[in-house]
Length: 172
Image (cartoon, rainbow, N blue to C red):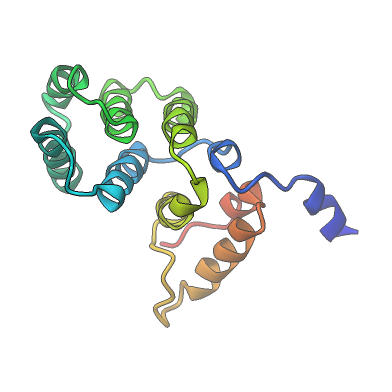
């Protein structure tokens, strides 16, 4: 009975389903957009795109928001790739604290990921950043005390039970 009720709440394994649950930490939303662009970059990107990627990577590494909104605003005009644009917009939302309880990141990311096909190419990136967001750890099993939560998150996420995955107690 429990399984059938949970199955009724299963979401699609695509951008529409991935971006239903609000984000807990906007840095993870910025990281998702940035690393996904990096994974599909084919060497044909413009200097502006590389500059945008370097800026986003540096800000993510330093976790320094001071002045990032303004720089992101300047780079938005030149961000032609939807994932880089999404990374910049998520950074601005984070910097301005206007994330709407984590929902605004979803709106931005859904548009960027819907534009990219096929969406399943990005599933492992989404799983990685969503696990980091929900549990505070990466999904890779390490043989430590948090493997149980990682495994439960992985199973729930892969089955489209995104709300259930986020209900798992974060690792501390």
